[in-house]
Amino acid sequence: MARRPSSTTSRRGDVILGPKLLSTKSYPVVLPIGDRIYALARKPSVKGEVNFVPWFEVLDLSQAQVADGHLVSCEWRPLPRPPFFPWELTPTQYLFPPEVIIKSYVVLGSCILLSVTGQTGTYMFDTVTEQWAKLDNGDLPFAGGATPHGHLFLGFSRSAKEITLYKIAICASAASPSTKAGCSSLSIAEFRVVADMEAGEHVVSSGRFVSLGNHDNPGFCSFRCRSNDTAPLDFEHTRELVTMRTYTSESQDQLESTRALLISKRWKQVYSICDTTRRLTCPCLEDVMSL
Figure 1 (cartoon, rainbow, N blue to C red):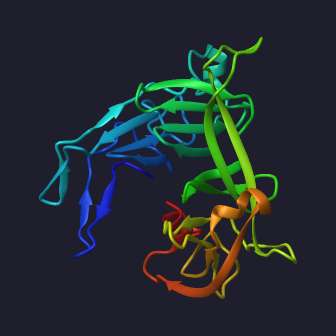
Figure 2 (cartoon, rainbow, N blue to C red):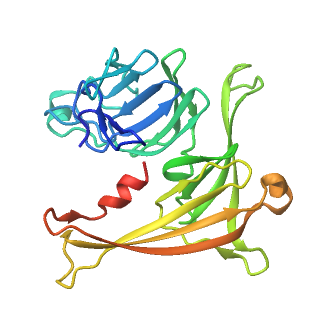
């Protein structure tokens, strides 16, 4: 549940609290762009206190300062509601509102791209003009968020069920009977991520991963969590095993010819986490590491 942002200093481990969100959001989509942090309700609600309006907010940290363990000189500001969220409902629709969930998202330059359940298409929010627009009639091909990996993106393919590399671009389309000249269009190219080109071995993936962000020697981590309690499987438990696989990839220069990103090195590590005081809710660590 997100009520206010926080950060941890690297030197002392102190927690710095940020200002409260204008509305409480459960597992929101949080996206940093420059000096700003954008928070969008993952599953908007038309009533109640959680995931209610404003569904979309921004926090500008360009003038923020730290005082007594808190961020000051900054506050959350509401943004235009997404056009695909439920609005102007009839009395019957209000009693049984349509369910909308953010299923795919990525930050591309100054733009946020989104796809949602119940509708087909990709929507774009321009953070400069703060306007929404429908960019494409097709959905983004990955589940959840896509992570920057060099000048490309890593995402969990919805169709292949594995980590895939994407080249995403917004292009100005030429004039046609259905579109005007200069209108934006979406271009997405997919590349496999493999560990052995000859055998076609795919990288072990669980849909939870983070990019290491090294442009000279790029890599990423894929991880999976499971309960390690001796008692019968329960949603809440005291012990959890975290399996982390770290991958280092070759240069992306040969992508167009090989149509795949080759993994050069792999490491596997298993961690055991135990908390006998506060029970763990699966997969608590997985959610934290995937931010």
